[in-house]
Image (cartoon, rainbow, N blue to C red):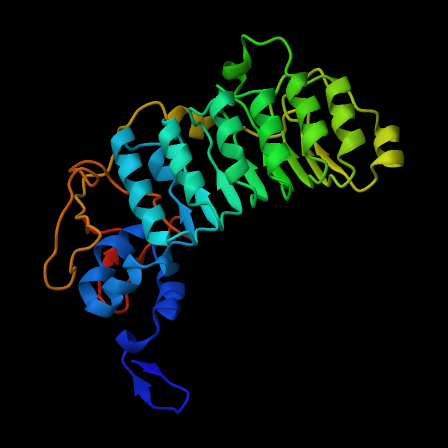
Length: 323
């Protein structure tokens, strides 16, 4: 029960859908999709609507799922958002058609994170005009894009203030220099405040070009950019408010994350039921095993945060479940 403005207790199911959405977005996606719809009809309607899907973060889960499962999940969640999604984080996007589908529903999208995706320069040049509201972009470990894609993003995403373009050392081993990407950033992204280019094969000249054009830059990640030599006196005189990380490595850079995404295996032994859109999830539950398979767990698949166990106060369900 919840207490209304008049002091009287009211049933949770009488809350407006947007209020329920704000509450449910603090739960894991497992709970939202498999537990909440079973509680009552109004809760089922709330999670089928856009209020729970303004922030969609499935990056960790998508590193382990099968490609067809990823497509199904994205289609469902983006469709549920009804164009209201503000943040989308997914790893390993593998089709140009899915990238186009995301852009078609990106009217409110401000933060787009697509690490390890198979997008290309040519498709970015076509799709970028539909991503005009993006302020944060992550295209780390995207091996098939280069300066053309970077410039297309900058040309059409005029509000972009943060760019994450990290690479893994093994992915750039066959390249000589990537200063063309530095020049593309300098030409097309003058409003950047935050730039991460760890392990790009940049030179001092390329970085100086960025610094000369991106005058609002506050943070620059150059870890692993061994050819870059910046003079401390120059930085203090001309970029006194800029924090530079690297080129020297001061931590273990995403070692475990890269190693773990080499296959689709998952250690979970739990089986999860999936609620199809359009079904009356309270009176008739429908399962879709093409997404939730017997050994395809959902660890890390959450909308707002990761980790931590809890007991749902309404349903009494424990997460993670006990073996």
